[in-house]
Amino acid sequence: MAKIGDVDLDIDVRNDRAIINVKYAVTFEESDKGQRYNELCRLIGDDTNVGDPPEAGDDDPLAFLAPLYFREIRVDQPRTHHRRLHVELPSVLLDEDFGPIPDPDEFRALVTVVPVAKPVRKESDLVVVRKKG
Image 1 (cartoon, helix red, strand yellow):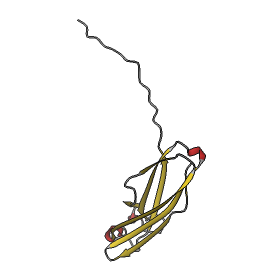
Image 2 (cartoon, helix red, strand yellow):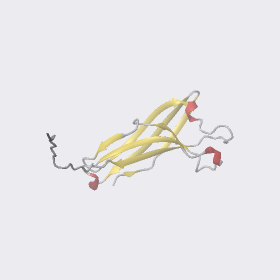
Image 3 (cartoon, helix red, strand yellow):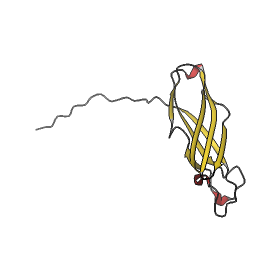
Image 4 (spheres, rainbow, N blue to C red):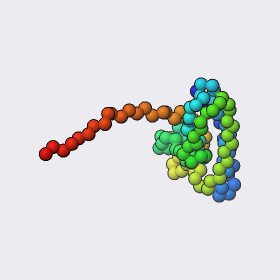
């Protein structure tokens, strides 16, 4: 089964731009050979692990970092894929704590690797219906 190493998130806000860098590695083993996986990295605004009040709500997905939605990987051999993602966003998108919710804004990068299931299908025998009369 695929394994994700440590995920390193760095955010540098410069005026109206936020420069986001994420580094991680995904390791595939011999048992993954021939399997396909969908890989996704999202930026999450954290409201549940930092002691924000209940009105802050749940954690908020703020951005797909790369690729948009997912990247499909087909495993041909056991190996480690090193990822370095670099995204620039308007810094206003990082304002996830506002109103009565105290600052600062808190973030996590969430990396997900999901096996793509091979669909199981079976059809019935062909049935021919003739009109009577």
